[in-house]
Image (cartoon, rainbow, N blue to C red):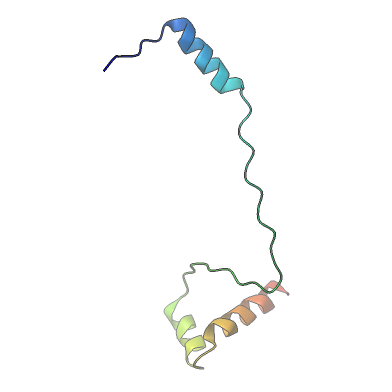
Length: 73
């Protein structure tokens, strides 16, 4: 195994290149499709979760509707 040696000029050129090079373009966000749900992790107080789950199946849709209403949508 050989050890790489860098002289001070190479080190300075690498530092200059790193400081002056343009950062990579961020990946474009994928377009949002209407009506498509997105999986998220959300922390909700136990009593709030119990309230929505008391109604049985569909509690996630009820939470979504309540959040929509709160957001003014």
